[in-house]
Length: 360
Ligand SMILES: *Cc1c(COP(=O)(O)O)cnc(C)c1O
Image (cartoon, rainbow, N blue to C red):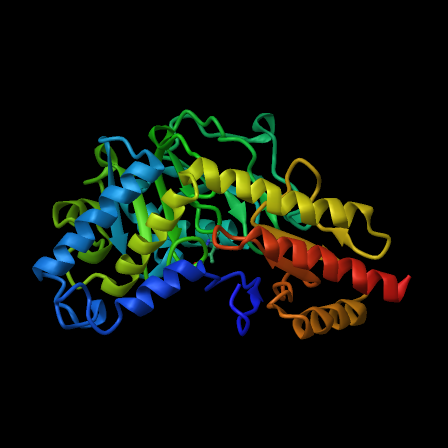
């Protein structure tokens, strides 16, 4: 890591790999002889058209997206998809939602405006500290889709399996996309706000089974219609050009790290270091139950809010930034996204141990 940078554990927008930032800097003033930055380019220019097509192709390869599915580069964040999904896929019918955290709860609430939401399971009563087992899901026969959030960013739990639902699977992968291989063909729709694992904020990636498009409610805005966006290859209007370019650099970096499988190895290694340390600790404990723990967002606490605050300041003074937990969950949260080097997890473990030595 460069001297003057910190280990940034922010939950989002988040850390990007240094080689990605360095490449962006090198190409910032003059992108490959065009005499301009990608930020200044027309989205219809030859140079940008090439960036766009290449980025899509790299993403398709790395995620192994089958030809049945289209990749869309959209705006509006993950939150816009909370509405776009029911507007496009619900057809005024019933959809099943698993509520395992704040964002899936918000998505279900939004969907209620467009049809009937069946709560297939909610982990609210246990403070979202676990993920339900397949047998616990109460599914609707002939549901329009089953919705879940693969990684619960705020409370730090992650689905360790892909649920079986009998209806198209719709998944929010905002906080764990491209952190492990995924069988995309099993899903009707996968989406992710890019700002955690892929790129700067402003881009939302949607992977949609083309056979599900074209059923949107009649008043669906054009910009939210999957069918329209597929037809225009995401270029109905100006796309987030700079973010798409940054995604392209990020995808090259992921490829160099061994692709999705390489990311999974790294993700397991980082998380295990931190969880092992917490499980050994006499001062700190992890929030999520074993078997449901997130490799991407490790939530932990001492049980004493003042001591938590002291630890956060102690870590910040040692170059470990943004360890404060979300206000809904309290305590600490270490976001260990794709770009977090193993050294960041090692530094966190050293810091936890040092703090503990001073306090017990
Ligand atoms: C951050 C996050 C969101 C919200 O993303 P926005 O792009 O800010 O709308 C939704 N779902 C998950 C899982 C997230 O981590």
